[in-house]
Image (cartoon, rainbow, N blue to C red; front, side, top):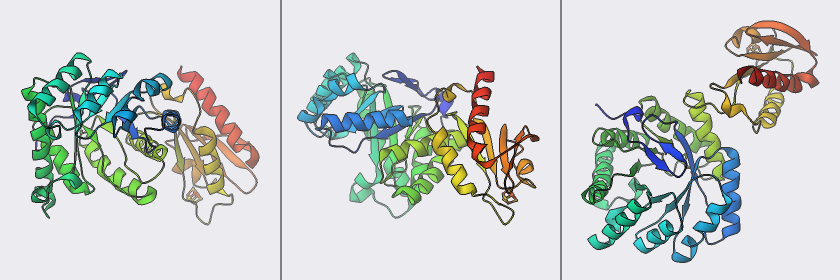
Length: 363
Ligand code: SF4
């Protein structure tokens, strides 16, 4: 099937972030605080920013909560998307408050007049609208047992909303078509991308708890990203949303789409390993996860931490540098060649200092 790939999608600006048209695939997440509670919502958005979230969505269920947008925007740096169900007055207030994008399905607003007013205001304020349909919200009539038919039903419902906006001469549009079924989701995105070139926000909805949900999200999102589909991603997990950001970033980096710093290469260990590699690697990961400035690298620095001297340097020869463990000493290697011997308590500081000099040499 021929479809528009991410380099061919329409460029859309969401606040200070551009998506589509080959722009870097953006990491999104969504708060799970009560948006009437300004303080906890801002705290969570800041945590998401810190973790590397680039666009945040907040659900505003009523006029009281949506009036917090101006104050939220003053405290955060990343673009804010207001998720609104049905009530166009809440959407209008969100625009008035300076929101960066709306997620609302125009077919659910009601009369033509209300849609026209909303579109007029969104146009005036340059606020894009995301049409987002989830399989769970399809009417019974659309809920087929066949994954392909379910995918087609998702696309049909999305197209109804898209056409309403297009009839109103509005094309500042982003689309998502999520299902918790990987096959139905992938097919739905492919079919939609064969019809329109609007940027696509990807997600496998209701993916589940942290471990199984991460696996499911990575599998589903990975297929679409590999095939050239997807301008922004969100991993929907039943967990702290910071975990969604970590997963999305890790997925994009492991597939080579984005560089967020360090790519850790470490072995699963075996009978040859004489060090507590699991502990060392997890400590290294913790200490380096917030290292500043690494995002500026055009590709992540690959650091290996391997369990034995016999095979370690060879198995990790793709790494920029690393350490392989012996009984009381590790060997430091660079570009596959041994350059020094290091005591176990110095492994992590030594690797961190090598990351710093690597970073300096790339700037
Ligand atoms: S690097 Fe060494 S310890 Fe690690 S898996 Fe390979 S052989 Fe085993």
